[in-house]
Amino acid sequence: MQELKERIIAEGIVREGNVLKVDSFLNHQCDVTLYQHMGDAWAQHFADKKIDKILTVAASGIGISCVAALSFGGVPVVFARKAQSINLDGDQYTARVHSYTHGNDNTVIIAKRFLQPGEHVLLIDDFLANGAALDGLIEICRQADAVVEGIGIAVEKGFQSGGKRMRESGYDVCSLAIVKSMDVSTGKIEFA
Ligand code: 5GP
Image (tube, rainbow, N blue to C red):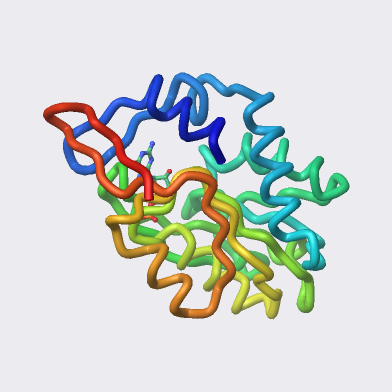
């Protein structure tokens, strides 16, 4: 998606540890018009799929998913939240997720009543690196007997393993920008 790539080139900052900062438009300050265009692009890609619900992970997936949901006819958005051990009970699906940016492990939960067996879901996230966040969502869908119809990603870091692994597992991954390489010393970002 040309518009997203141009914004990444103009405003993206390459950080140590293969982290791309795009917080001026994607995951801190939010450009909702860009979000709308991203939603339209995913809706076009997944036009032949039945999407009952969008699943994402707190916090940075929530904004893009809520705007994108409008492009899918206003389907509900459910976000996996980080578990507070105090309120864990049998009414929730849970999965362990390693956080790429924070370097720690979290248990994420989705209440069972918000994900029904047989529901067709689209997974959306802002970034795809090694795929741990998606693994968590896929595991929760497996527990719920929900059907993963596809995966919508804003920025895939193509030099990391997640995208390849998801595609090899048979998932339809639609990444709107795939970063081929980025250099922390020059700040140069190249797309696939
Ligand atoms: P994964 O689980 O695929 O390894 O990493 C994806 C998750 O980590 C996303 O939910 C995203 O929030 C975060 N993440 C991974 N890489 C980056 C990055 O380069 N920049 C930002 N801002 N977030 C990232």
